[in-house]
Image (cartoon, rainbow over all chains, first blue to last red; front, side):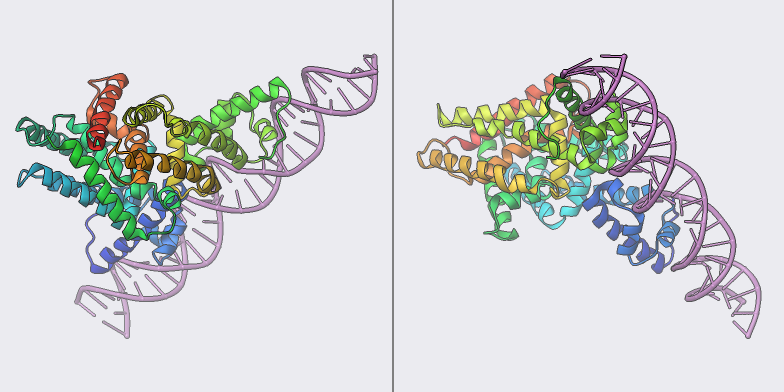
Length: 206
Length: 206
DNA sequence: GCAATTTTTGACCGAGCGGACAAAGGTTAG
DNA sequence: CTAACCTTTGTCCGCTCGGTCAAAAATTGC
């Protein structure tokens, strides 16, 4: 965004450390709550040193968001016209649920941004994200016309997958509190996977 | 929390105006992002004047959260053992969806709080909310044992209802962007209602 | 070894914010 | 009318935070 391509290995490593620390801080505290000082010390450097690699706080955030959106949409990108549509959708749901389990910070950061009205990533939403969703909605609609899955609104179907899976990362505190500590994270994940498969499959099977 | 019961009508009205303004600011900007100044001027008074009614910013937030949780859980509280379980669940989903449409600020404020780890309302979650969910989970499980609805995990069912309905308030920016401006808010609401009914009903019918 | 360049840091600045305070203005009871 | 109380406001303070800057330290090229 602001910096040219990182050249040396050291520069790339430092930038990497900063983005990792920034992910941690931003996802826990939001854009305003996370301070440059906190990010810098989490990355093992001083504040002016961080500002040497990224001119402004916004630039760190922007760089983080750019790569985040990429990995975040990968499961949807993988949704393809190979194999059985129902199996394909089941796999999509499971992959999204795995991402909520394995990358909760990314999920929360994204949720936080959208909650605030996506002031910083609206272009990306309007662009790449919308285009991808449009494309996949078409694919899903084709499946419906072929009688492979029940006829319904493909956009709201995608929203439902997003909502139910990301819920386990974004509302983790609530989920853990309500379920109690009886089961570990793995147990919760398996229960959720089983439930969601049942919910979506038996609702989608023609 | 800090102030005794409001006595005069004027005091009650002022407190009401402050809470209304605070809901607006907090839901748009988060706890840190919303300033006392902004809340005060939105409520039509000066900052020190607001501080006269609520000693600290936290007190405004706490008062707001207290009443928020109450109205927020009302639909779940209304879930009762009268009439057909499937109809009851369908009504619950619809009421939750209506709340997302009519009270999006409340939804976003709540989501924001949970996202941050619920640092300020954890006791309420642990107490009232968990107790209510436990109670209703028991009711739902009874329905399952009676063969009225498909056997599955009642807790995750409740999570799924929360996630899918609140998604339309919390991720409104994304939803609107992806769906485009073709349909108004009412159109989106109707589509969502239709889709969710189909998803949940055909997934729950035994 | 030395000069040029890159990286790191301590010190600083200005803006914004939460909150305190005392004084002013308004209201009510006798 | 007046004294006691309630409400409102202007002003101020201390702190935090984003960002600057110049100088020091480290690294690199020759």
